[in-house]
Length: 246
Image 1 (cartoon, helix red, strand yellow):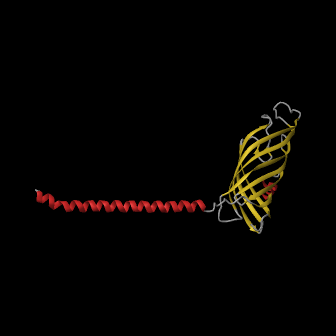
Image 2 (cartoon, one colour; image 1 turned 180 degrees about the vertical axis):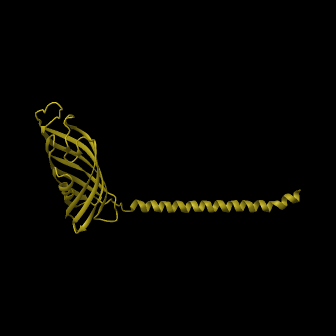
Image 3 (cartoon, helix red, strand yellow; image 1 turned 90 degrees about the vertical axis):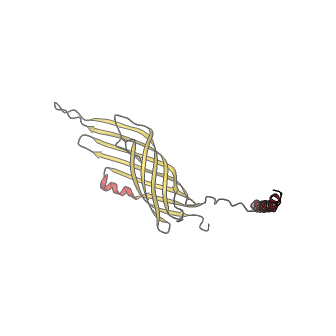
């Protein structure tokens, strides 16, 4: 038994050396890792801080809604004009101001209708493109307000027994507020000349109008009887460039 014990003693010493070697390698590795981490922290401490690129005014676009030309064919009772200004901030964000005027005149069999008014919309567009520094493809949001008045005359109510005298509704002033979301694009046709298209959703928020005398159309918003209107715009823009050397 003693011989067997003496025989296995060298084996125990080899195992101890093996364990000691592993511990030595681990401790050495930890010391080196700690030194590298410390050096890296020192490098990060003295590394220059990269500032985010500031927003720069690249240009101001002046635009006209050429889609209103179609009124001559599809809505001859309406005459309207709409213009736009957008402020290009590093081609990422665009501050937008849009406005217009509108007149409607209809002569129907049972009534005559007239309205006129103006509107303004203020909001932002957000460009989702990153590769193209001049084009735009994105979404936008607006707050709109319209001030208008309308009237009706020669209103005839049909009756089987007698013909009533025509009546009239005097001109009254109203206003309407709405939220507008857009999805569209603007592409540069030639230098500083752009074509833009947008699909719109307008949601009425508040306003003062007569429930018994609904406006035929609210300037900038659409059908007066609807709380939600869909639409589209087609614009031609000219961009006044800024910061050409940046």
